[in-house]
Length: 405
Image (cartoon, rainbow, N blue to C red):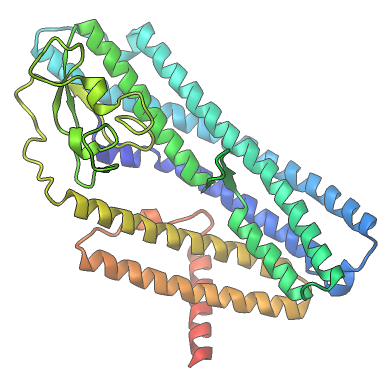
């Protein structure tokens, strides 16, 4: 069994790698767009075929540069996922094996079991395959985004639909918003780091769950105990697998032969995307004796309130990370633009965003203090946000606020 805290942290390094790649993509994208569009309004009034050829040539260079970085990232990510999955598997079975040993059973260590190793390998390959798909499609989407935004700005300006400055600012805004994003067939969009963290956390949860069930079959063990934590998702609130609060911290029967406990898979939805070990689930499970339950004293009366507070805190954290990412992108754009009036307007927008970030940080601190929540500063970090970036943003926020007095 793995703790909810462990499953929350297990994807942090993978998320950091993904954040670095996304920041690289956005910064490169903004530098390219700034260099292409930021030479002045007159530069855009060239023949359309000449413009298109230039955009396509630069788009090819952009994709090539991103793919080089993806190659570096992929090697780091594969190593991290393998290490994290192996550690989680060992930890989960160490917990379970204590119970088996107490019952007089002698389970085979993970690395000495070909069956368990193959199961872990399958999950590792599936998780890595999903992450590689994310990164490949993100690189191609960044190239498409560059072409679309450059061409759209060209059309808007040459047609007289909008001003030069407005067209470029819209292109930069769209690039910051959509650059490094993962788009699903449903139309839903996530940041690359969010998609990767979810994939790694889910993959590890499913891998450990798979080997734990296999170990239970080997040991002919029937009773299963699920973990529990405050703030568990409640789904639709009914007595079904999507309501994790309903089944967490309880005993279940794996085979149905222990009649006093409900069926494990039917009750928890294990193996489904919304149930136990499903997408982003932080619950785990392990062998139980049907008597000793370390989660029995967990008070769940305030679960809904805590779940709501946790969701609000995560939303505030995402908002801060998003603004920081926008500031990093805006800085890249400001630095790459040559047209001075446009550079001035972009700097004004940067200052406004910096002031917004200051207000968001203040709101986050107040929310955590008022609700007695621990500030998770690591959840506020993004790649490339260093002391220099923080100092620049702080100075810009002060400059913006002073100008409004």
